[in-house]
Amino acid sequence: MRVLRIGALAIVWTIVVAACATIIADAPVLPDGEQRELATLPSPTPTPTPVPAPAPAPLYSKLRVFVASESTDQIWVLDGKPGEPYALIGKISVGRLPHQVGVSPDGKWIAVNNRMDNTTSVIDPLSMREVIRLPVGKQPHGIAWSPDGGTLFVGHERDMYIARFEAGTWRSLPPLMVGVPQHVLTITPSRPNELWFTLTNTSQVDVLRVYDLATNKITRIKVNDVHDAYFTPDESEVWSSSSGFLSKPSDRMV
Image (cartoon, rainbow, N blue to C red; front, side, top):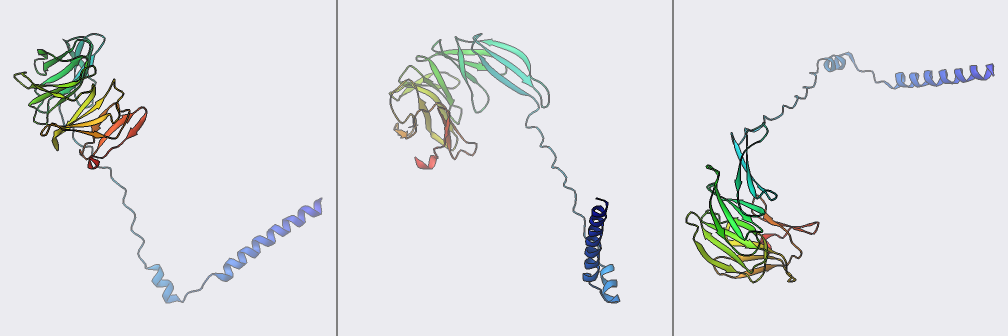
């Protein structure tokens, strides 16, 4: 056993020496002039440490949020500042089961559909009071404002038309007769004459549709079982949710 151990050590030592000898033998030898030139080569410039971009400034100094509280038949109002928690500052009584809330583009009005009351409440966001309660159809759900803020649209889950009201006077305008119950309404500034809406409580197919406010014509989009539909921020596409799946019908297909 002792002889084998020594032999093993000898073998290992031989390999190490041989390896070292090979490295030394293969190393190139440069003339003195070239060695001096290599010694005077500048060292590589160190890579600068990346500096993170400064955080963008907040777009607001104070934000007011309006939340529909179905269980209390109220709109709860919260105020918050950047980096601080929101604080409840008021509660506004409305109709039964407030569900959908829509803010006018100019920020002057808050509209909320009272789903089990067949009414729509309009709220002044500064005074935090209900200025009017509008009678609408059965089970109002979808809500949208025209891009210029002049018209309020209200859809119904149990009626065949979309109600319209003139902002400020709250005068009822001729309804849009669509012939099917609606769920969600959406409209965008780049297409102010297109009111997109989804269907509910119906066996009809193509449940995403577009009402042309200029021609009163309806275009069917071949998407089924749609719940919600909203424009992307750049307004180039409409995204819809369909029973757990996302569908992305481009507006270029219409």
